[in-house]
Length: 141
Image (cartoon, rainbow, N blue to C red):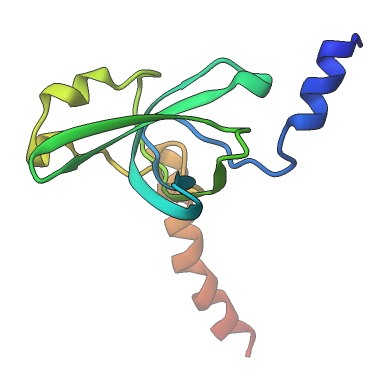
C-alpha cells in the first residue's frame, strides 16, 4: 500500500450505507452561511452512484414546486453529516436519467422488497406448508 492509498483510507468514513440507484435518501449536509454553520436536509431519489473508494459520489434528484433539482454529494465528505436510506427502489438500470423526462406518477419507482419467494413454485410450497402446519398440531393433541 502506497502513501496515497493510506491517506485515502484514513479519510474514509467508517459507516456508510449501501446506496443504489432508485433508493430514496435523506442527506444531512452541513452548510456554512457567513460565520454560522447549519445542517440542511435534502431528500430525493438517487439517480446515480459513481466511482469507488474516497472519490465515491452519488446524485440525488427531487422535484420541488414543479422544478427538478439535482445535487451531487461525495459520500466520504466531511460536509455530509449523515445519510438516511428511507426506501430501496427496484430498478433495472444503474443511471436513472430517464426520470428527468417523467412527471407525477410516471416518475414513481417500485419498492424493492427483501425476503420474498424466488419463484411461484416456492411460494405455493410455502403456502401449502403453512396450511398443513396447524392441521398436524391438532392431530397430535
